Length: 364
Ligand SMILES: NC(=O)c1ccc[n+]([C@@H]2O[C@H](COP(=O)([O-])OP(=O)(O)OC[C@H]3O[C@@H](n4cnc5c(N)ncnc54)[C@H](O)[C@@H]3O)[C@@H](O)[C@H]2O)c1
Image 1: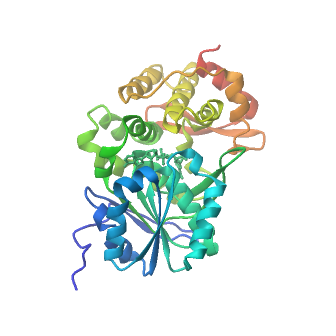
Image 2: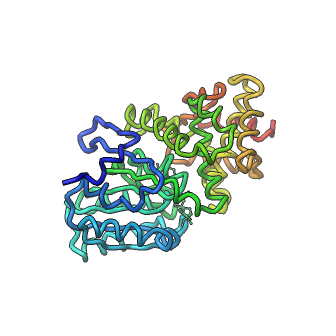
């Protein structure tokens, strides 16, 4: 029998040492979406596949994925949530778990997350805890989800007290990226993903930083692959986020505070962009990174139509930032740029974070 997937080769394979996680392949190919069924079938013997998606994405791509799974012999079920962060809730988690139980999903069946980070995080967490863990496949449809949230196994829902407060590490069995689906993304959602791409370049990837100075569209697949490769290295070295993986939080300590202070009106990508500017300005003023680093970051973010100014006060941001779950006792691991493509973890007393934010906002 011909293997329908022989023409396709995974771009990246993530190999994890932990007992619960296995290696998994990541495909990055234009037009691969209709092959979802074949690719899932090549790694999973499941009888049933449960698609979790949001209403926007399901309207655009649900039928393609459903038909593809059905053609590969899966009995296909669907659970569609309203689009938006509010859907990444404990309520939807329980609804979905009950739906899977009602439809007699077993441990050998699978969940297929078709959507952005909201869908991927919710689907992954449901898969992690349903029957103490069933396989799940990520089919990311936003740039942010392709370069970041679909890889690495962080899954979560939001609680009343904050974002991502309940979750688990649960690695996908397969990740399928079809960059063609990004053509339907609204411009500001695409820009959100660009903030994460710029983040990777500032953490350690000079080649990516240089690439981002040429038009992104013709090199999108390369850029997605470079970002995932950067994340792969950090995840393989530190699956559970106790050490180097925390570098991925560049711009996030303050970024999360900005999101929270705005009541989540400011998107994650925009907040990360502002967070990167604040931490870079502080690092430059403290002579941690060379003069010129801030201008380089601001210019790049602006070229991708991302915001670089923040109107919240240092005190307001500090109060939220130090309540963040990434706090480690009295200390916080800040990710600080020492130059372009050279960010490092700096363990500072929580009180010192206020000084960083004040410097970063230009308040002192
Ligand atoms: N797990 C992780 O490691 C990780 C990392 C970063 C972010 N996140 C989480 O990811 C979430 C943000 O993800 P996001 O930015 O993808 O947001 P999202 O999932 O809300 O998607 C953004 C919007 O784009 C729409 N959309 C998605 N794909 C589309 C397409 N191809 N065409 C048209 N519209 C489309 C969605 O319907 C939604 O309205 C946050 O909850 C964040 O906490 C998780």
